[in-house]
View 1 (cartoon, rainbow, N blue to C red):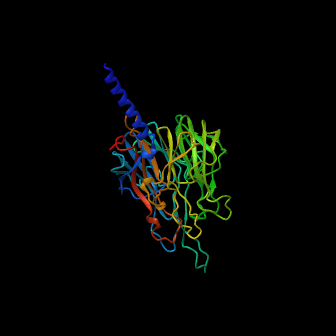
View 2: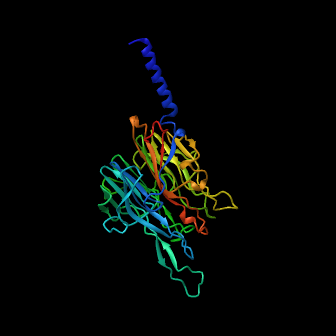
View 3: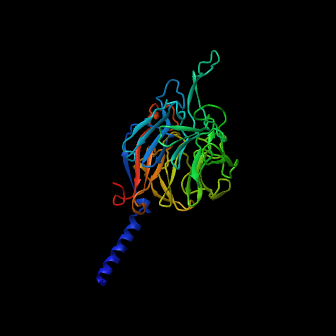
Length: 411
């Protein structure tokens, strides 16, 4: 081979390597957001779950707020038990199971769904119910209806999203919503979550209970408690992922809004923990660079954590309901050192366009997985301003993709 040819090949390799390092899959600042489906067939919803099983996406559950009545009833929502399937990564959907089909799990939101082997599993969650209020005589301000919830600790599994088998109607762990779940070393882990509705926002029982226990199961039926009191504070809405042989837990909340009795405001977390067994936990950072939040998502893409979305409270005393959701995307390789790579997830121009309580997953594609992308589904953009008659409309049924530049993406 002539030297000139060798130099030409070497030059091409160096050029490709440079372009790959500058524009490749590790340079998240160059990733682009693409709206895949602006208005999917499924109803706008929050607290949903999406699973990729074989070559299909399965979307299920969640809540859709109802138009406000008079007097308004916080938490009044349609709760879904439907299942939708997509064979083209969210561009089109068809319903495969109705909410009222009695042969599967009862309708719910803020639950977990995980994939293990050939099956998808549904775990925990809550519904919302309207109940007649026993108003005392001659009390004009007593609302005729109040909201309440059932908190589930059942487990179901399915191969196809249509036929479901109940593994247990009452797992060893207490019923809860906002729990975290992950499949690790062939077993399903659940941890955290809460029981009872928040009286400051939804009403319901006076005390909201938060958990920091950890449980595992190989089959979804038989559960073993790994710890009843993990070193991380009890919370709901934490995100758990598996990376490099560890379970990681990130963020969450132990309250929706700031109360006079709150020990901190907002009552949200931005700590990061990890464990090899669910029983013993190591604190990676007590306060990550990203602002504390619930309702966010974290996925592992190209051996990096990618964190975005979530709910934020207004810091403006003159406008307590001002949309203040965090406009940022953060990445980290170790969970301790974080870099902000964007201030506009979903191409958002303002905080009111930032979602929380959505779902997200990674679709891996391409040579050395160079075309792997993050997909997001639905989500909530409501504030806690119950006097806003259009607030209930701020819930989405869209599908987005966060992907590498076009020459690496799956266009």
